[in-house]
Length: 369
Image (cartoon, rainbow, N blue to C red):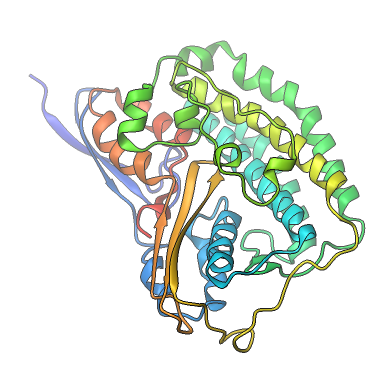
């Protein structure tokens, strides 16, 4: 007779992402119950933001999701601009898109490498992480920082692109395109990985919609839901790209979509470099006070963008003072990292838990924010 045992997946397990853990109750190799414990490293951001000046929050918000920090800068800036009635300069829109798509590539490379950590294919991890460093090198040249950039600000971007950076970006894109066949052969065409992931951690369209999953988790069920297409921001309506979808809804389909989305992001960045105005300002000055202590008109707004994990939104309320009155973050990881873990993992095998967390892109601070 089997006995129910409590196990801890994370935070030091290679299948766990970030300072978090999942408490698993198992009988034999089968999960009976699962509980997410988000962790205590990056937490409580919403209340912290309500106690800081509007521009002070720029140093705080990127930490809500470390692998892709720029999405927080973008959606926060969009909310402030909407409340203040600020029009962003044209060149800034295109620069923002370059930053966001570079961040998307970086996050997808990390996630694809994570599949290797969850299946024993460590070569994939050893390939994608150094390749991701090439993106971080570009961020360092543009912003002065590799991870937390604080570059996208209300009114535009902090400073213009450095001279000649377009050439450096294109060289990195050329390199990544040359790597795509190797990624495909090692990961997508790998017989062991296909056997290990096909039909595993499966989610139907109805289940995804029921718990609020977006991003590749939803697109892998056949629904082409992408904020960049259905509610374009910046200048996404001016560039050509497709939204890859699948119908299987399993772990294999999800990381296959990440691979395909890498190519679309490269395509978008190339168009941004070609189409953005060359000689224009990249930010505007806010009225109503100094750079730090300006006031945002009273009102409320919800802004959302497409992160590598799905729909990412901020609900921001201003009472007209020097600080936000209320901020709520719609983290893309919340549905799959909390509802999904606790409702969909029971009944699965123990070794498949890490595949759910990885291919669903579980970023713990988005839950405990």
